Image 1 (tube, rainbow, N blue to C red):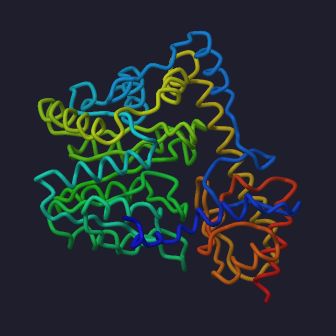
Image 2 (image 1 turned 180 degrees about the vertical axis):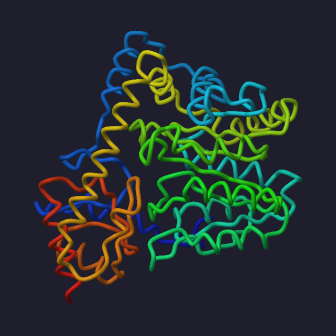
Length: 397
C-alpha cells in the first residue's frame, strides 16, 4: 500500500525550529518562528490570558463539544473586534462567522469554500511574493491555481505598489487576491491607509475578490488601526473572506483559535454560506477546540478588554524599542539597515543573503531563515549586541 509514497517537500521553518530547539549552545538566539517572545526569549503569557484562565476555571464549563461552527458569543465578539461594533454589515446579518483551527485553518476553509463556489470560475488566486509559505500549498491542495506577483521591493524595503495595482487591473474578473491586513509576514512592509484606499478602488473596478488574512491584529498599531483595510473593504460593499487568528495577539498559539468571516451582499446569502461552512467543518474536523475560544471570549469581554488593549500597547512598544536598539547597534556595519525601522510588527527582512544567514546559524548560533527574516521579539537587552556583532561579522566576509 505505501511502498510508493514519496517524501514531502522540505519545510524550511520546520527545519529551522527543529535545529534551534536542539541547539544547546548558551549563545543561541532564536529569531525564527513567528511567536511573540518575552525578554528571556521564551513564550510570553499575557496577564489578560492568566486572568481569563482563572475565570474559566472558576466557571468550569467542562469538556463537552462546542457547536460545530463555534460558540456564538465568541464569534460575535471576534467579529466586533475585526469589523467594529458599529459595522453596518455586521448588524444587518451580512457577515457569516465560524470558528476555525486558528488562522491557518481559516485560510484553508476559505480556500476550500471558494474552490467550491460557482462564482469563482477563474479558479485563480493571486499571491504577492515573498509571503507566508502556506498560501500556495493550501490553495493548490483544494484545486485553486496560484499566480505570483512581486509584492515587496527589497531595494527600497517597501511594498511594490505599482506592480500590485497593475496586477489587479490586468487580472480576470472574479480572480482572488490574498492580502495580509497588517504586519506582513515575512517583510513587515504594509500598505499605508491611502494605498489601501487606492487598492480598494482598483479592485472594485477590476471586479476581483479580496481574501484578507489578518493574523497580527494589534501588533502593528491599535486593533482598530490594524483592521483598517477590513473595515474599508466592508464599507465599500465588497464580498470577501477574512481570516482571523488569536495566536499572536492573545498568545493562544497551541490552542489553535481562529475565525473565518465571510462578508456577503445580503443576510439570506449569509445564511446559506453559514450552512455550507457548517457542512465543510463537520465533514473535515467536526468542531474546533473549545478551550482557546472560551479564553478568548472572556478576554474580549467588558471586564478584560481594556487590559488586553493595554498589554498590546506594551508589546508594540517593546517591538519598537528592539528595532531601535538593533538599528543603532548596526550603525557601523556595511549596508543599509533602514528596513529595521521602516517596517512594523514581529518581522523585518534584513538585507542578508542565504549564505550569510547560514553562517549566522552554523557559526554564531543565531537562527533565522535564509530570506533574512527576523522575529524582532526574539531580541532582548542581553543579546541584541551579540546579534549585531554576528551580523557585522558575516557582512564583512
